Length: 131
Image (cartoon, rainbow, N blue to C red; front, side, top):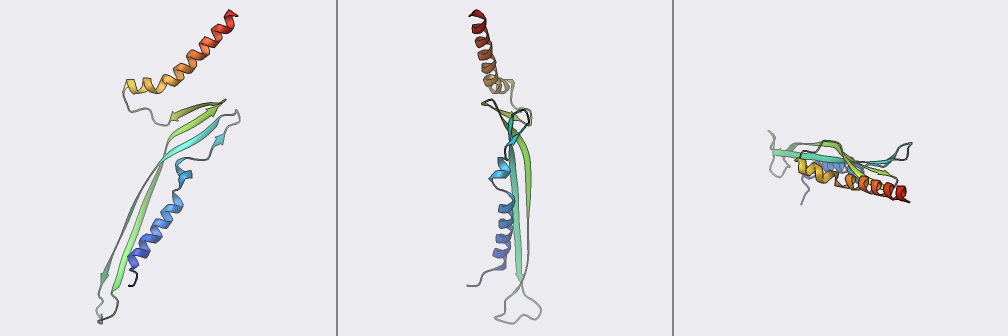
């Protein structure tokens, strides 16, 4: 059976999308700042794809002759940064680009690790003062 032109059209478009979007697009390459902080960008990738076509007969179409084909395809890609993972002195944090959309409780839960770090620092400081 003969391969239909719409298959080639879709295959080419999908190949181009795969070339544009890979894992390095979502989790970016680490960037190290002069003061020793490593930043790893995290992005949200969305894409859409459409293809279509039609076979139609020409005016002078003869039996056994292939129909004419007309078709097209298109794709759209959106890449939006959503967060950065920061690494400094072995401490890893996730920094959101957008402010949290949740409630105050969500924000409190998000801050718990930072609060625990601060309490540990304060406690270790008091122990040093008592010695």
